[in-house]
Length: 175
Image (cartoon, rainbow, N blue to C red; front, top):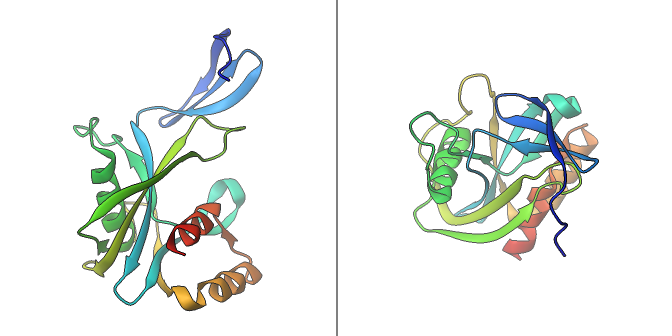
């Protein structure tokens, strides 16, 4: 059941986030973007395409799905979510897929943020470029065989990396 409107106040605002107090509930809200996408991309060899990137808020590298913002680029504020998914997959990993479908929509952390992530799936993704992200991102991409991915993830966690829960969402969809 939706809560009735309350007193809402912006506490502070940055380039892509603002902190609000909504009736006593403080949370982060996306600004200057029209959406958030995550990509479940598999190759013809039944590999899941993943990213590895240092994340300052948790002070370590995180294994994740390729993901990013839609509508955050100047002149592309009305970018379609599926187009953002294609762009983010190419930018971060160098992979491209032909057929795309929207498979799931969910909040990323509903007690902390208003962010809603739309998951897209593509199969038979092909490596066309190096990837690595845009300026300053320093993303490493991985294509991990599904048959051994749980062992690979466990090894990476033992090495001190975190695994974003979106990876396990992807594995559930790929079962």
